[in-house]
Length: 102
Image: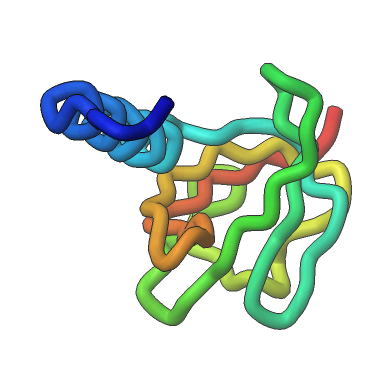
């Protein structure tokens, strides 16, 4: 069954998988914060309803209500928009824009 693997098919599958991972990371993530921890936030994604763990580093730009903020300023229930990169299979935030829950 696998005696003759099509190299073009394998290359196409690899490119498709890679593009899917890159597109997932490059898309903005948005939802509500369900947890704020030392180096990450967990959000409930508003589109797919799944929880997403987003790592936060010293390079992450954080704003809340349009003002510069720290990770500790974020609160449960805040609505967030996150720009993130995929790094070794984890989402690492480049920026987090938060607004208080309504």
